[in-house]
Image (cartoon, rainbow, N blue to C red):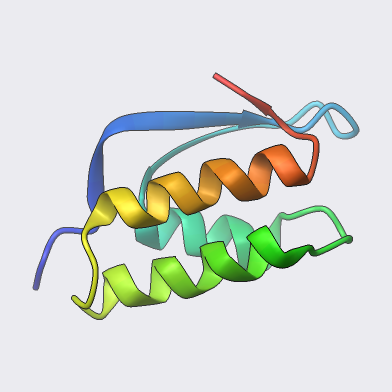
Length: 81
């Protein structure tokens, strides 16, 4: 099985809930998108879901999911570090 990990983790802070999540792989990103994402889903959210699936199935490199997750977090007004 191919790795879904990326080189630099992303920490997402939700200002509404105060929760901090560090994400290191496309699998973790997919789980956060599915279970812990704010209610309003824009186009970047759907792009991130698709990118995670592509990486998990070996059809894309991990950085694609990382970049898509960053874009989705910005769209959702989440803080990144």
